[in-house]
Amino acid sequence: GAVVSQHPSRVICKSGTSVKIECRSLDFQATTMFWYRQFPKQSLMLMATSNEGSKATYEQGVEKDKFLINHASLTLSTLTVTSAHPEDSSFYICSARRFRGEETQYFGPGTRLLVL
Amino acid sequence: AQSVTQPDIHITVSEGASLELRCNYSYGATPYLFWYVQSPGQGLQLLLKYFSGDTLVQGIKGFEAEFKRSQSSFNLRKPSVHWSDAAEYFCAVGDPLYNFNKFYFGSGTKLNVKP
Image (tube, rainbow over all chains, first blue to last red):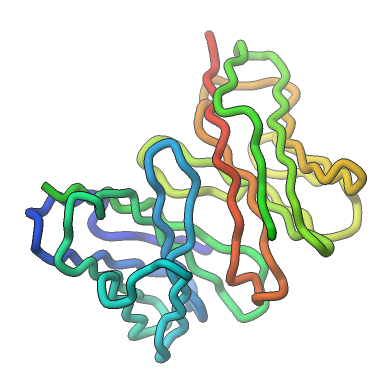
């Protein structure tokens, strides 16, 4: 149980285009979903926290207009990288929590974004 | 500020040998501690977690970790490593003050297993 999927697994796009990444909880309803970014040889950095039906909470230094997060249902959150540039190339990982107050986060397999 | 340190970037062990991966944390209250494993191109899989109680916790795949408050450590161990254990391992602290919305990850330790 507690399986999280992401789509696509990898994407290559041209600079200036927008890319949407989906995160789905497959066997549970996620009250909260999280988006992380992982640079090569570095750890995960939390970008934002989203609750279903409300605006996402962004971490300091993360541009909310650049990284649009939509959490339209209890099983789906999307991250859209708008007007992507090469410096946005990274590994994006989402995670989900089953219920409020649960300590554990369940992680998706990640999406590799390469912006040319 | 909360932080997690994994002092070893790379570790190589022979198959069948024992393993210990180090994790030190800085946190003002009782920490909620996790170990995750990441295989190449994959997401993070939860190995084990510690919230309270017995300081030696057992996880999946034969892993265990011991919480030592006096040393602010939560080291991961396995008595006999298998080739399939080659992966990157992350230690994390969950912050209950933010309803566990904030996880602080270490920089990871990459484990190589020699045949």
